[in-house]
Amino acid sequence: MDKIPQRCTAQVVEICALTHDVKEIHLKLIDPPELHFLAGQYITIEVTEMKDGHPRLNNRPYSIVSSPNEKGVMRLCTNRVGATGPGSSYLHALKQGDIFTFFSPIGYFTVNNQGATSLLFVATGTGIAPIKSMIHHLLETSSQRPITLYWGLRTEEDLYYQDELHAWANHYPFFQFVTTLSQPTPKWKGSCGRVTALLSQALERPEGQSHPGHPLQLDHLDAYLCGNGEMIREVRTLLLAKGMSKKSIHFEKFY
Ligand SMILES: Cc1cc2nc3c(=O)[nH]c(=O)nc-3n(C[C@H](O)[C@H](O)[C@H](O)COP(=O)(O)OP(=O)(O)OC[C@H]3O[C@@H](n4cnc5c(N)ncnc54)[C@H](O)[C@@H]3O)c2cc1C
Image 1 (cartoon, rainbow, N blue to C red):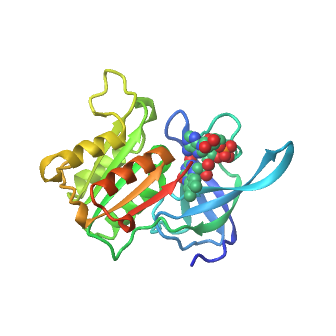
Image 2: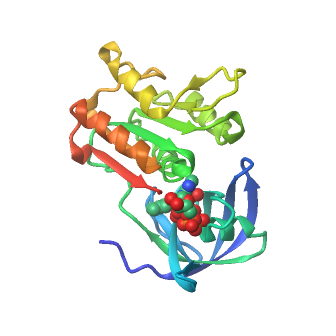
């Protein structure tokens, strides 16, 4: 059971523009000075939004992108949604030195340590946030479970975290990833198309050879999907049709 979320404060120590519309917000915890959370969990912020012409207090969840091993600090990764979305507008207006109030981490989108040995992660957009935290934590704890990540973005302009993921893949032979662009320019040499299509092709190959190289054996796999609802629906349908059980497919729908 989740604990009742506590009101917490932190200070914004750095803002990194990862792309034209994605920012990483680095927070130093003030109260409490340390927080225990599981990789994949999210914090919640309160925003005021207009409903039927009246201002109303509402919540917006944001996943923690940093690893739980980083004590006293926390990072969020957020994209700008339109011009008026109250949650993303608030986060994107934060400046270094600002005090940030939020509710302590909760959520069940976390790695099942009693589950299958191999792990498949599929993300679209900032759906990478909880997944990066999970993978980072798994690599740090030297679990050595084979990890495959499929990440879908739109264009070259939307790419981020690529150097870090490459460094992980070079260092840890059991981790591999592919970033695929749905609308690349002709110059793009990497994978093209939507993650669902790429995953579907990988599962059609003999011996379940996945695109990056590890065999994807569905009977020994736990899948974690995060991002937009359409991708989650499609990938879930695909994995179920291939015989994966419902309980092996975990997901967090952002919108
Ligand atoms: C458990 C959970 C964790 C989340 N973690 C993150 C995170 O780590 N980083 C992050 O950026 N977002 C995350 N989100 C989404 C976030 O909570 C907000 O929904 C998002 O920031 C939009 O809020 P808003 O108030 O700016 O806009 P709203 O006014 O609430 O939304 C405007 C419209 O944008 C759509 N929308 C919502 N999110 C997105 C998106 N990411 N891209 C495109 N369209 C979208 C909605 O369907 C809605 O129609 C998470 C959502 C959930 C449920």
